[in-house]
Length: 383
Image (cartoon, rainbow, N blue to C red; front, side, top):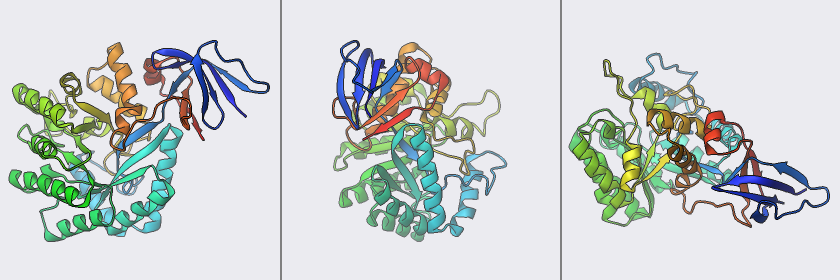
């Protein structure tokens, strides 16, 4: 049976749209007449599906097994390291499927997961899962660094060669500043050799001296990598303003996409501060002003770092507009549109609602601002 969405908001326009396994007609409001027996839905908001550029499916739903008593990043890493040796293929797959099901219920139909290369079990399981979920990408993520031991580097290289879509690194976690820079260069060299993308956990710290992002930008400008993501970049929050301005311009020039993860970083950063306490969020407004590309990740879904994750990207967007002082009308709309446009860029071309489109979300709200306020479940349509 077909459905006619009448007088629905699509971007800045109001339209009529017919769905019958795909978008079969799209016209200005009042242009389409209902067919006999056709379902008619009045009003609401239409968008393309959302994409998740940053999640950790290998650790999802594990938070209750090792509760994070302090709520800190370091304890989260320690708890995960304690759980990792006992991972099984079945457990990783079951939790990942359940988490992807949660995402789908919130209209997220593309996913990029990081997988800790310290577990070959987890790497193999999530690479296998791509056969079941073709819209899934996997990043080889060395949770405890590349250069701290020969085994860590060997596991990381094995994971990339086994078929991960993107090469990860965590330069701020290496033993020295120079080792962090070396790890970035190693990641780019491996990506160039194997034709992979790059997706770094970059400067996820309050330390204003953490300067890995500029190295990633320089490597990107050198060419040879199809798409580069720098996740978190929370040190930028604490950079001196003149240096932050330089880095924002460098990010824009290089084309590196910064992915902010507001839910995790607002609680994991600032832990060494007295009052006033910093909130670890990268400078989204200034990156936008410089012309840089920004995405928004959920990051943790009930894992050892953040027990409160829901897999609803609107929750991450809601946190961002508050912590980032982005509650102006245009900013709120831009944040929502990021979820179905910029968030798709790590995967390729963002989808659009046009005739022939085979994925569509219908939301029971009038516009993007109301979508942020209410954060409802969408009607997910797939052909």
